Length: 311
Ligand code: ATP
Ligand code: MG
Image (tube, rainbow, N blue to C red; front, side):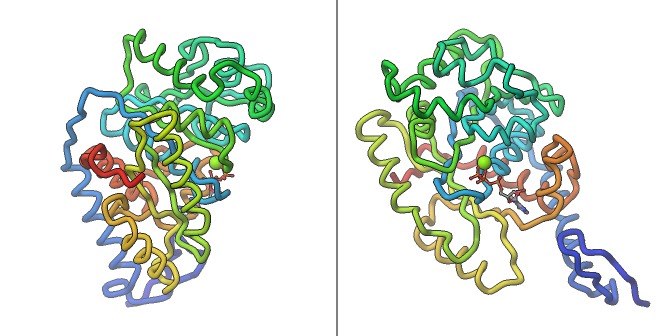
């Protein structure tokens, strides 16, 4: 018997015998992985891990990874604060957080010393998920910060003040960075313990990486000794192409300890979720992209990240 089936992650219509088709194998694989996830329990350390998601290359999946890892962590019981440090405000949008120009935002924290607690908003997606939104004003902060006192430490001071005084201390703070190595990213590096680098599995994947690692090293030396690259996550992976496999192998060879086992597949569900103001975990929790981000979140909890830095 033959079935016509629309592939979840491509527009290709696959006509095949379902019993032994690639689609059937993919579905069986997803079901098995979902079962493992449903049976997995995680133990949270009780400490707050501050992770900045950074890569000066644009469009590699920083924001997508920030919001989906955050939602996946919340789905296993972690309390998570997302800090949107990108003037584009894409993380705020994906978490359905109002961030029009009139909203008090991370800009006011950095420039006007408004307490972080005053700008944090709950995400409608989960009681455990919160967001400090960015607004378009943040675009000017890169310049305005230049003349400020302790310009590299503004986010760190605000975050430490928040963590010291809140009753709802998050298990994770995840900071979404803009695609640049300017003062906003430096503030994120100074505030964080860990750097997570999303790498898109495509031809120029490693371009700019040595510059990024060099910057992390400089920050570690001069501003924040505890900073280290704990996690590298391969994104937008298309296993059908030889190129994606080669890039993944190359990254794993260079950064064996940092690269997550889980790779995030290229998936239409992942890319369309933000237009509904949702993460893929809420939008289609059974899809390949959601399962992968849930697996990645479990890995992030389970790995002893502190011992695995490269920078
Ligand atoms: P920027 O540098 O502009 O901040 P970014 O690094 O934050 O970009 P994203 O905005 O997360 O990158 O992703 C870039 C584009 O790729 C978006 O349109 C997003 O929907 C899409 N995308 C990200 N991850 C995936 C995926 N796994 N499958 C399909 N599309 C994806
Ligand atoms: Mg982004």
